[in-house]
Image 1: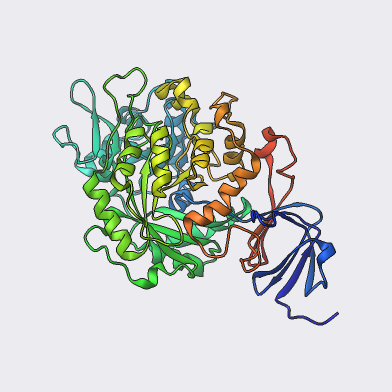
Image 2: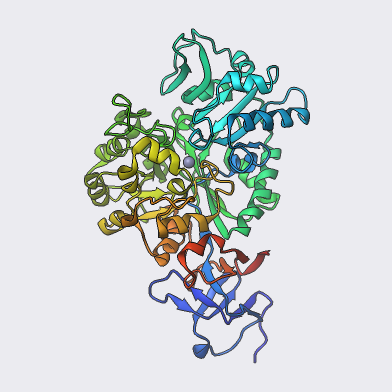
Length: 534
Ligand SMILES: [Zn+2]
């Protein structure tokens, strides 16, 4: 045998699913300088080149791509109070958790929490400022709802933000008031910004360190490529923050999507920022067409169950969508729009129907979540080449809210993945972590199980007609996620691609589908290097 450079490795004895439909299965892979130089069956291999790594007959998949998430929020959530089961099952529990956290709290700091869902609280209602005041009256508190579109704050936080009975609702937001016009502390959509903007900001260095730490955790879930769907240009430029995170050890290939609100006034980006060969780059412009199903702020039609007048909230307009699309086109990046309800989805498709996209190697427009597209919307989105990026974990984790707000029959029609795929829409899976009521929201195997079984965490039926098979679910987390995020050379284990792959402790293609959420990632490789081992 010839002598090869140290940067060559041959992986043998794997049960590899490649996500490449031309060669879906293989056992052996030669990796040279981080890229796959050869892949196939051992019987066709001429020589073992470089180091030999035995994959021990375990199931191997391409590294997973989370096409829609919020890494900075997820990183910060770990330092906040988790207002989800098993710790918090009631408002009383929530008050106790806040009190515990006050004892260890430094002065001048805010108390922050995330993840409450009134559907899961035994009182069946959302906490108010009076509940939070009971926990601490002189320290400002903000608790984000699971959907992240709604927050509840205490009286101290309202006072610091200068919000009074007389403060008008900001455009695209709502300050809740009771029947006497008193503030309840609940702030919806853009009204949250009234508080967020006065909160002490963390430094770029602190955030970058949290992101690097999160990166290791994500590798343990097999996630080798990530996205940030709420990237800002100010006060911190996320591009710079993520680049700093890379210096601190962030390994993932990362695409950022700038919020339209930040770009509106100076939409032209430097060409350097959008270069997709860079580990960190800008992939699109993000805006919102509505809120969430669980928070009853999705812009729906018919209205929410039992509330004849409540069609949710519209948070953008045709003019705004067209302006953002123009900026996306000028920058050669995507237009990425959050839309859950029928009307929110309709508005986007109506605005762009029949128009030609500006990108040549992927969808120009993405609809995020796409919970409730009508059959007509699906057909028209397919014709226009609009992609859908959706989160199977939502209906799994938030089933109480879906049943309560939409009813059983309508819930079963949400996220109609088979219809989307049949129509020819490009679909990717993702987690939207931490924006869902699950203790480990970013775990891809929970999402895959939900899509394959269409059963919620408690066994409730979420729509058996919308089930897909395991292979399809994996494709939506790999090959299709690549086609939509446009990260170069990932998503399939094929010659020329980066050798980003994961080794599982169980064969996800063989085990019973109700066991999929117990699958653990044993090893994660990036560019052929072992970067995580359990
Ligand atoms: Zn999101």
